[in-house]
Image (cartoon, rainbow, N blue to C red; front, side):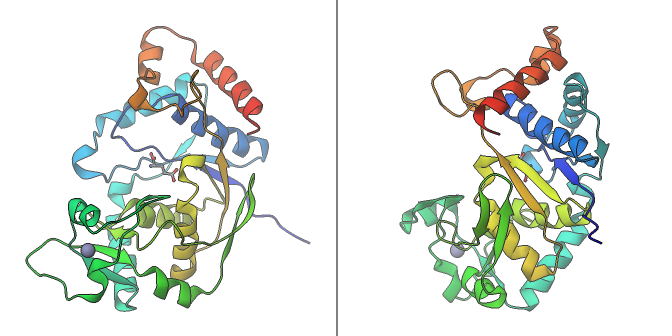
Length: 276
Ligand code: GLU
Ligand code: ZN
C-alpha cells in the first residue's frame, strides 16, 4: 500500500518590512492547503537579512496571522540555523560547485548583465579569474557544473504541472552572500528540508527560484517536495500588489479595527476567482 507523505506547508516571511495583502494570501493558501489535507502549517521567520532585518516585526507578523484567523506551528527562525548553512556551503565548495565572486552590483551592470527571471544574470566574470583576497567575496553556484552533475531534473508545480529544470534566465546565482553564510536560495532549500515541508507554497513571483532549489536538493541529497505557486493579487490597475505601491500593511488595517477574518474570507474568494 502507498503511504502518501504527510502534508506540510509553510509561510516564511522576512521581517524586513510589514506584511501586506499579498503576504496574507500566501499565508492563507498555505494554511488552507494544509488544513484541507489534514496536514501541518508552519511559520518560519526568515530573519537573516542582516541590516534590513527588524526582529520586532516577527511579533507583529504573529499578531497579523492570528487576526486573519490562522493557526500555525512555529519552527526555529533562520538566524538559529547559520551553522547548517555554513556546513552545506563548505561541502559545495569542497566539490568545486561554488566559486568566489567579488563583483559589486555596479560592476555586474557595467559588464552588460541582462535582466533575468531572478535579477541580473551574472556574466561569469569571476568564474575564470583568481579571487582577489582583499575584497569581500560572495559564492556563486557554477550552474554549468551543477547541471552536469545532476543531469536533467524535473519539479512539479500544482498549477503549472511538471517543470524541467531550466537555467536560462538564472545564471550563476549567489548561494553565500558577502555578509552572510547563505543566500535566500541556500537557506530556504535547507530549511524546507529540515522542517519536513512537502508542499512549498508561495507566490508566482518566486516561480523561477524553484529551478535553483530543485538543483540544490539534487546536489545536497535532500528530499524533493512539491510546489504550489499561487497567482498574485492585482490592484485595480492590474498591477501586482506590492508594498512599494502603498497598499496598507496588515498591521495598519488591524489597528484601524478591520475584521481580519472577514478580510481572509475576501482574499479566499479573490484567490478562487484568480484560478488559484
Ligand atoms: N522569505 C521570503 C520572502 O519573504 C519567502 C520565501 C519563500 O516563500 O520561499 O519573500
Ligand atoms: Zn564576480
